[in-house]
Length: 446
Ligand code: CTP
Ligand code: MG
Image 1 (cartoon, rainbow, N blue to C red):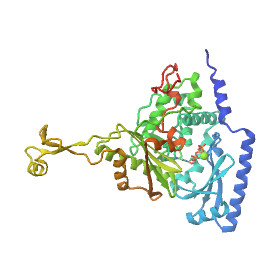
Image 2 (image 1 turned 180 degrees about the vertical axis):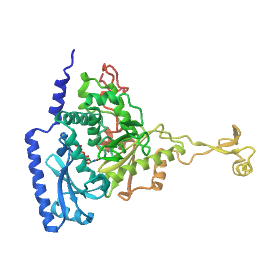
Image 3 (image 1 turned 90 degrees about the vertical axis):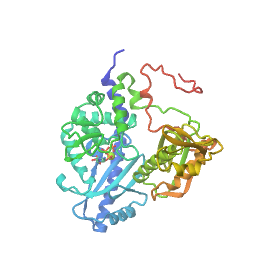
Image 4 (image 1 turned 90 degrees about the horizontal axis):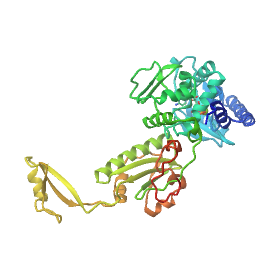
């Protein structure tokens, strides 16, 4: 069977590009927002220029792209004054935080970010990372033709399909701008994949320094040669991209670009820790949950519970999921003492010399040891003991932590139960000939 790549290409573009009438609706919504902003400017006596940036301005937007509207100030501004003025003008806006607070609006199927920043003429004058945006827009407009813009759209959808699109900390994937820079460097989607299938981490692209603050990917920003545009891409996401690039076949393009969600069951023994958010800023809560999950895993391991897998999820509430090897440990715990020629032997024997109900002390290598009573035997008890000692962000309510296991796992929202292994590879990772069976006795899928 021969593959008509150009037909597939237009099918992908048809699926990802916003239909013209929706685009028009979107633009008229934006016009309304811009005129409200100009009104606010007059009323509050604020000196800023409204700038439509992001992928819509660059012509690389896909369905689901947000609209990035910037308020660019010529001189010092008070971010909190701007925020309160924005909130007054857009009462339905949601407050978000990056370097400065900003507002997100939901408008019939798309979201609009209203982000304050500074208007700069050159990258030497940057004050916040937002200030680069107009330079990015200018760069893409200047160097991309229509075909390259479409190639960027195709690459963005591919990254989305395999789950590595988005620079936000919940994803730590490639930003839209990184996708554009890859197209700038390698011209076509297909060339990018050809290159990516050969990458080794750390990935260094173009004339970039080999080492850049320990980043897993180095792709210098052409508008600001001091900045690695791919600084926050995680090792896991690059590895996922490398794997997807090497497995990609045009015959199976849908599995990569538009994968179907599989259904999976939660492993027996899973423990989920649920945290209620007082204020749910993902840029704060997700890194905090990740750190907490690392500490929890380490502590559980030191108590004898081997953790096979752990993940975090933020879905209005925060979740840490732990998949231990076993949920219950035996009543005896090995307690290893000092080497036999150490001065501390006598104090060890002073305490344990007459043995325990399991027997007398014994020698392990050159050390003295004993089997003692295990205090914490159930994983839930161990988790309950550890969690209060873990430093949690102020955004999470320490009084409302819930440990969920056993039958209670069934009460968790579907999204939490379905996404147990997260992020996971999609159906594209299944065997190319499709003859691999899932290791699940209940599944009758082939
Ligand atoms: N930006 C950046 N680096 C990031 C995130 C954002 O430089 N890690 C800048 C880019 O100039 C980008 C703009 O912020 O164009 C808006 O960000 P975003 O909406 O995430 O990217 P888009 O290019 O608009 O892509 P999308 O289609 O996903 O909205
Ligand atoms: Mg955008």
